[in-house]
Length: 326
Image (cartoon, rainbow, N blue to C red; front, side):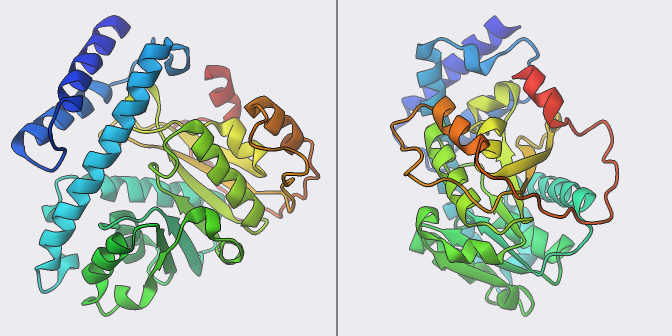
């Protein structure tokens, strides 16, 4: 199955990469829908990490193309929604709205399976012009929580703000910050939960720098919710290396790989160290293994676990299982 799958992905990549524009259109929508349908089914024989270099390069470029197309799609529908008197009541016009409903429910269930206490303040990094994850989570699951949304693009934040300004509840609980995540420091220590969007850090090295930054500034005991990808879905989104999460000062609590139309895997981790070594101990020229060795040997201060744990069942793949598969 791996051979036909890779041939199909490569064929779609050739067509997508030759497009003059990735803005929403019938041709663009058809090609990306076909790509998603091709990559969604389980691919047990596929080992993304062992793909030859040409395919790795193709995958990296394809993920960037997907990211660009997704951003353009969000800009398009955010503009349409802003024309409604109450945009929040019309979110269902977005073609993947039901996926966000399912993903947000999944993330909420995973979060509450590890800590029953409702967070008063959370951050969503990489919220974009159409912050459906924050909106759905705030309006459906965490109805008393303040959401601090971070995006590097001021235009994206302006568009996002226009969607909630007419809603009497969300306009008070959705805050938008224009900032590079790597320049946000003390603020991360104030949030009980930080959600990191899948497309923040497209390359492994880039993602690793973001994780180390969060590990340095998040408060001990705070939760980090990450979106990853598994199997052929890794042609659509970056894969989070759980070893990098651990090396950044977090304890992996669970990893879940959906098999339905929800594309992203969900990783939940808890900050367990009050110290992430700085550049006196390693630098960006070190290999990943050297950085992990330094961080893993750092002093660890275990955070007290929240009460109210419950078994999330066999759907959750614990770290030991994940490591065996990697």
